[in-house]
Image (cartoon, rainbow, N blue to C red; front, side, top):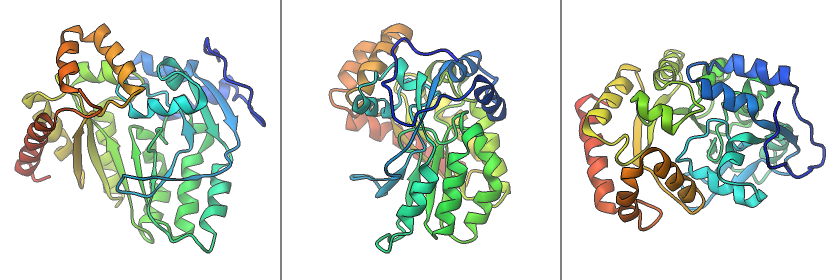
Length: 317
């Protein structure tokens, strides 16, 4: 494996997986569609660490607890809001985010201790809020899978957000969980437009492959749906693209759909504007006006959500 130009600080109890382990994980994750996807996963630097805690308290969201088996993500989505969290480790929000992946190898064991406490009230846990829990390396470590088993045994509801079709590997544990706790899988498919996908999400599986994963999950009796998040102004928000994407989502059998316009917080904002200048320079001026704050203009957001809602209703979503 190649190290990044910026070396990761030495961490206690750290280990780097072998090249064979990474290669096997990539093969299981099935990300051959874009050459960049295999390259990003193969060239990343993976470092095993011991987590001190598993569950993170969250404020201002529909959920109060988050669980993230990894830090960093080889999916390398240009708009990803989680890039801002790299600052806490003094890592860059650009290449470091997708090429330096910290693997919390002991997370299931720490989680088991936390949910066994008498004070744990079995509130819902959101899995994958700051990293993709089914990025390719999960094929080797199975940290997400083991965490699902822990939460199920503790009668704790959970919800998963992922762009990784590798989630279908865990249909058995998800099906078992569905019988005893409230759980769901939200597969992120912002668009089925292949040009936009290739530029915006260079390390991910194709959108239609993700939608096939939704169909497989639903057929297994799992509550699975799609998040068209984020919708990227001027790139994936045209009426034709939105309608085509929603039609594909309806065809997948998704049990629910949600959508929102991209958010550009400090850290993620700088990276995304650099991406725009490189790939869509004609949009930079408009984005500067549209994103005077970290969220897009409220009127624009209402317009796009209105288009999504009307189309989804017409399709029975």
